[in-house]
Image (cartoon, protein in one colour):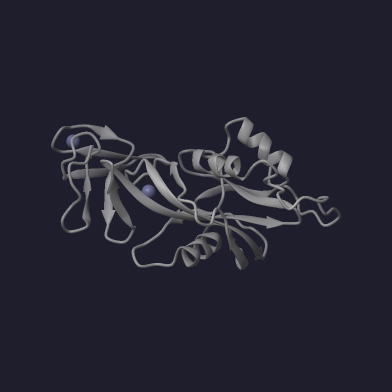
Length: 214
Ligand SMILES: [Zn+2]
Ligand SMILES: [Zn+2]
């Protein structure tokens, strides 16, 4: 619980008791937050860095996210996260205060995959897409800005990914069915159905397939 937002906009607070004074402990590829006030040790904390956009809504802390469904030759770019939760995701990240969501999306695509977005279309325009999406900085839900994008370059790994590759629509559906997509990404694909991914219809282009990333 978080009783109130910090006045300064900066600080780390315990998710159990809401008090400041939380120490970050780095484990092997893992992190914990230990509270000096109540002694709780948790995998996350309310972290206010003064940059990420946040607000309270019905007693809940919300963040804003921007992400892209990058499409090429009828397939979608996904990467396997190297950090918890170890599921497949699309390039996405927090929107910082005062930043343009589309610019943030382009930055995340480049940082997480090395691709340069050449065109982007806002999806769910006019809808308020708030998704269950617990993050390390303590929010349980995020307001998502989702784009469908085209991008140039060859995907590369980052320190946030183990595997990256292009997946056809059937493969995306299979990952979703198997529960191997992170929760908000599965929800985004579910919102795009029926007919999505592959909303444009028509045959999937063949002949120039890059190696699949798995
Ligand atoms: Zn505490
Ligand atoms: Zn967040």
